[in-house]
Image (cartoon, rainbow, N blue to C red):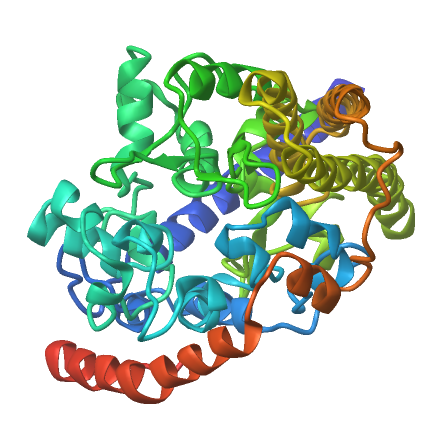
Length: 483
């Protein structure tokens, strides 16, 4: 009997040792594969294809971000014209470039191409944006910031850097070229944490798997005097915290063309919304879901086909969740449906408030009468946009998204009530009869956008100036990949 016990114990020990040895060998093979440098990469090398020579698996998966065929119920990588789908957005952003053109963002591979082509960046005759708008579009940005200095980079016009900003978001945005460790290349995130007394050295590698994304997938604003890019995190990450921050410094992105309210435009506060959700509280990083690990040829690596986890539920979700793909997909859709339902109520109420506020001004309302109205409109739209501008239709934190949207509706309806009081005092009939803005074309005509002039100017830019940018870039860096 004792011999049998010794036999089975020996078998178990040998089996465990074999598994342990195999695991070590696998890790060593992965490490060797990761750092098998066939070409030295200089600091600030922006060309992703040069990095790809050393890391072919990551490079091949990165190229798939150019695929635009995947569409989920509310997102994906396919192009969606949001102004066509939700014409009220034209009213909400009247007087701001987003009212001219706003489409669903495509994969990182398209970043430079898309920002060149959008009507928001203007053309030759009208190029209204600062160079700061390039900040999250290209691996050339850290190179240029290192060359000319951060302040000098921000304090130029967007059109002035066209021949320098060529390569789309990619490898060196997140990696050190010598060690491949994750690193932050955009100063605003570091500066925001420093104002909170935190050093980047305090963050773990798991933290960095979210923070490299948070360099760009966050709320930010441009300072008025020099267009310096700042994260408004000094009072916290919530919509309420950032609203208080902006109010205290009396900041606005633009004055609304109809209501005259001093407005805020939320960018894409994905990281801030995620921080309030259950995945963040379980220490699940952005990369865990959007860049899950993958195994090919016995080598495990990070899938750089960054995109919706719904395109890869098996690797992105079922690593932790045991439910079927169909069940997990339906769970996401059910939460997004509820957020979208409430979001639509909010944006319709805010659009009505802007139009009714214009009616009050036209009827002779005073600035003193309108002051509380404009404040409520400003806060309502900021809170709506804090959810609407984030990717995922609220899925990163559905409960917080619904709370914030609820307060947006409350503030919009309060503004509308205050306007009705003003209109009544001025002898105007209520309720005010709203115009037909049920399509993108009707809404843009109502707010006075000459869309054909915008398109013609863009064509002039693409057919004359952009072709020269590409020639100059190819001459400078030796190669120019056609993404």
